[in-house]
Amino acid sequence: MDLLLDEVESPLGVMLLAAGGGAVHGLDFADCAPRLRTLLEARYGAVTLRSAADPHGLSGRLRSYWRGDLGALSGVPVEPGGTPFQRRVWAEVQRIPPGATRSYGEVAASLGQPSASRAVGLANGRNPVCLVIPCHRVVGARGDLTGYAGGIERKRWLLAHEGASGEAGERLVRH
Image (tube, rainbow, N blue to C red; front, side, top):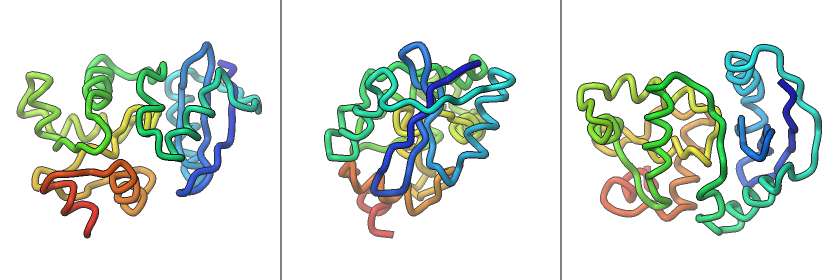
């Protein structure tokens, strides 16, 4: 699989955007590059990443998000691969709007599988397209920040950037 790769500066560090066919196949922070490569190779086998500036205009949309246009990533085409269950979880996570959070249990319940919160957590942790599939908006049952591949401080920053509101959002951003 040949993909185009761009490095995009962000307030949280350089991000790596892997794209092809007009869609994002992978998006992660540069310090998580081994994880990104592992996720891509698990889906496609051998992957060649060729440097490209703003592939398909996707890097520009990411830069707009960082500048405060929280809707810039809405509707960005993604090709995350994954199992049917993972794809259902990721599609549901994409429905969480900026400034909102959902618990793993709430995501599981919305899928009609209320006892699957751990499976939702595992799928969320294997998300290869952060921000566009906003896994940072999924939190613990009491609104606690829980695992995030990019680190809890980044998750906290992202929620603050998006203006996470409500009791859970306020608690998340303060702690």
